[in-house]
Length: 298
Image (cartoon, rainbow, N blue to C red):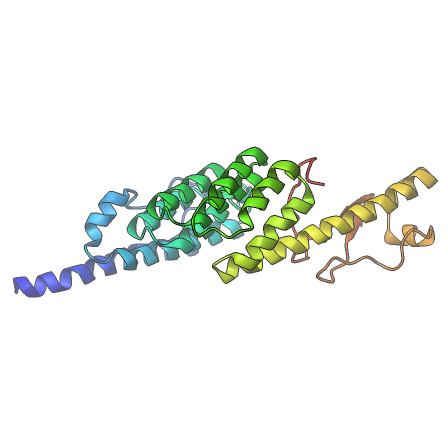
């Protein structure tokens, strides 16, 4: 009987962990406390304690916690609560990557989840960097982690010198691609330039390990195309205002003045929005919202 108990025990542990995750997700869907309250619980926060309980099922439990991470991030992102919080995001990612230190998708996706500005994410690029640095400690041969840290500094923190330093560090890895060295130089020389952002996303679109990241990189490139379009349209609107002393209120104003042909559409085919002189992508466009650019990133 004792031997049978030992065989069954690990499965019971796994089932209990899965049950905790499932019950909490069900509780939240059925009117449990919103993400903005302290009742959004993670029953085990200590990676060391979880590892001890996991026995030899670390990878399986890492999958369970990764599913919980995605549930927490997706549910919070879609919530309409203005006070929503992503308070469990980093603890869940920490548990996932402690159970499986080679869970690369959790590092990469988790860094994006953490860095995204509120309300699309918690706006914590510092935690994104901490997570990627943890990945680099676990897998010191992975130049991709150093590159990703540089990108967080570039895209979300607008710290181009630190970004270039991390790209330079990545380029020194024995297995790093040859384009990492000029990437570091370009970032240092032209940081904050939209064209240098385009170069970075093009590299991610070509080299990212995961298809989701390649798709996201392509979407970011199309967003940059839309920003170029908007610059041109704003130039036409400025010319209209200079000529007539008031901003255009509709595309027909620019068309009538000979400054525009047809209704402009973004790269997805959705018409741009002109509202009291302000030009943006339509909220219904797949490109909405466009990234907020610093003054230099133009």
